[in-house]
Image (tube, rainbow, N blue to C red):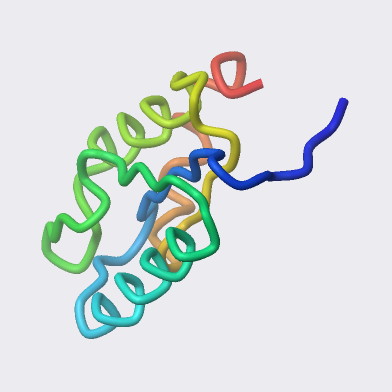
Amino acid sequence: MNFQLKKGDCIGILSPSRPLGKYKKEVLKGIQELKTMGFRVKCAANWDKKYYYESGTVNEKLADIYELFSDQDVKAIICSIGGSSSNKLLDKIDYDLIR
């Protein structure tokens, strides 16, 4: 299998932990750079949501993961920002779906 991305491929963006907050400008700049490089970008439904100190509820973050992994058009997934609350997802992810 060839896993190399090429111009025109779609890259999915999600935020499985912290909200973008003060980094939103930088993340948007990064998305623009991906587009400039010739990629299409699809942001998951809750990618820029804020729920207290997280980027959404556990169910919203799981929905974003499933949305992007289920989309046959998405060839790669990038997490917009890291953080410790993503560990709440580990025992809830449907690994068969993302396999």
